[in-house]
Amino acid sequence: MSELKTLYKEGLWGNNPALVQLLGLCPLLAVTSTITNALGLGLATLLVLVGSNITVSIVRNWVPKDIRIPVFVMIIAGFVTIVQLLMNAYTFGLYQSLGIFIPLIVTNCAIIGRAEAYASKNPVHLSAFDGLMMGLGFMLVLVVLGAMRELIGQGTLFDGADLLLGPWASVLRIEVFSFDSQFLLAILPPGAFLGLGLLIAAKNVIDAQIKSKQVTPPEAEKGPRARVTSLT
Amino acid sequence: MIISSMVKNGAILCGFALLTTGLVATINSLTADKIAEQEQLQLTNQLQEVLPHSKYTNELSQDCVIISDPLLGPYDNQVIYRARKDDEPVALVIRHVTPSGYSGDINLLSAVYRDGSVAGVRVTKHEETPGLGDKVEIKKSDWITSFNSKTVQSESDARWAVKKDGGQFDQFTGATITPRAVVGSVKNAVVYAQSNFDDLFAAANACPEVTP
Image (cartoon, rainbow over all chains, first blue to last red; front, side, top):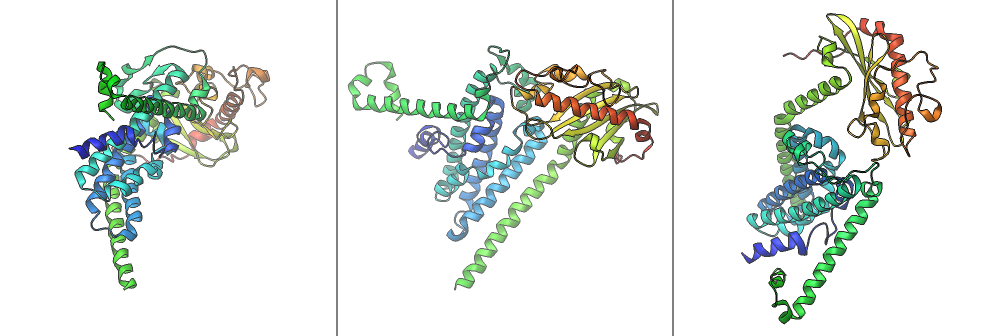
């Protein structure tokens, strides 16, 4: 139980693949121009991560140490190809807008990193949970970054959600405010760098605050916000 | 000793390669029909956007010729679909490419009626700057509809240019190169369609009939 809790905290916050490990930045920076794209790539990465973690964990006792890396790469490449084919078949529009970045999931170091660092040493259920949490952590950062860029860049949220979720999802589109011309910096890659930098900074600020509260426990117990400390 | 471990590792790697390839092949064969269907659907939608379905009666996506001509862009083998109403030639729908965009090729689909006027134009693929050049997409701006029912008088028709160059088409603030490239390419395609209209309809069908 405590192992699951650790995995959950590590994946979503403490060792977040995007904010702390800084892995998989190429797709992260390239596709987060809208929430829909971010969610699509996040889900694809999540699927691949869970699938590869489970498989690596299952075969971990049969793979000699010397050839584990090529085997892991093969497993991951296989899963990515499967996800790519499924997206091509069932979410055609999104597949076209994510384009090149689906095959690039293979090169996302977060995935082989988890295979090597966790799944190759731990039982199946824990590896699956680890993959799920790391994938969710990655997806959350993608979605938050996508929301920031979409909001600042073109003043909408969930633009094009129907590409991912089917025609009904076009009602999700929110026009928060409208511009005559879009704010280019947010849409282009530099905006992604700035946004990610701000997110990392925000995480560090929050971590620092939590830490400073821990040092003075009496103060932390005063208000209802004391719950925050129990999360660390 | 080292030989035997090499053989063992080789065999294991080989086993994994066979397994993953088999899995991918299975998924591929399961999704192949669906993917082909999606591509067909997309083609039908694209054709519908440039040429309304009411204008023709044949199966447009199954009636085409494949043409290599510098007017249609620097690449060989562009597809031209032929729309007929009760076997009478109605319009041509031309795939063409211009390399003169701001970044990379712009792929276009233009429909031209028999009288030489444009039925519709769509950009099918491009890599222009988001927020500037991407206004050629119908999703971003209705600029591309300004081609509708325009016609080219001659190859030196000065109206087929952006306003900055003395023509009739708007450019975008901060992006002239993209619309200039699109206008030029559509003009070439229209000129090609006008001068080869009957020949194209006389040519043999290059699109294989799909058995229902």
